[in-house]
Picture: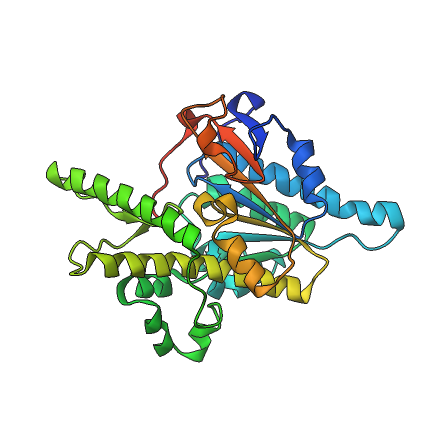
Length: 323
């Protein structure tokens, strides 16, 4: 049984530009018109983010149709790209969207996240209905986990087939700004884990986009642990960026709407940084959805979190497990 979606209205969110000035959906669409990639950064348990993703995807589809209406030429190609599917599942996605396999077999073989029926199914079904591709953009989690345990050099042992689901090796390291941001995140998490241990509880390690990885409490070298986790995070970023760049290489006129955890694209760091390495000159737009206690007021800490920032009511947040 599919989980019932929360009914989102304009009472639940506010849209701002990077400086904190009030904006609206039309402002986002005007900016998106001239871009090749629209990054939408979510908190995975935020129903407002999922609502806005569906709205922006629908509006992007209409934008792409304008070319046909205005000039009689073919519509601009649209692509949906998602962190939520790993690159080795691409054939399964293609088969489902083309109608070759049933939804049951798609769900059995595509390894969708636990919240797929409620939060991501509407996006996939819209792509299926309108017949545009879905890019399985993420690096397979088993290889990201290998990096978090053994470091990026450990990927050299993979088979050629396994490497085909990853960005070219060696992939770029995190930028200085991203490193600083990730260290703060990691130290905050480590502090919380220490507090939980002192209370007799266990807390899993989290990557910055929100899903769980293995705990590394026994790592003998804390700094090595940090470096490996940062390298794993960068593999996610580079993998998604390379998948997007490859699609634009094949279809340079396309508009790509990419969905990811907000840490991967906020402030233009992470995936966007890797994307411009793989494809210099790519025009992109970042939309960051933030559930903050300040809602509906815009706090200074949210400035420049994206080209557009959507504040959402944090009271709507729900836990996401099983990813």
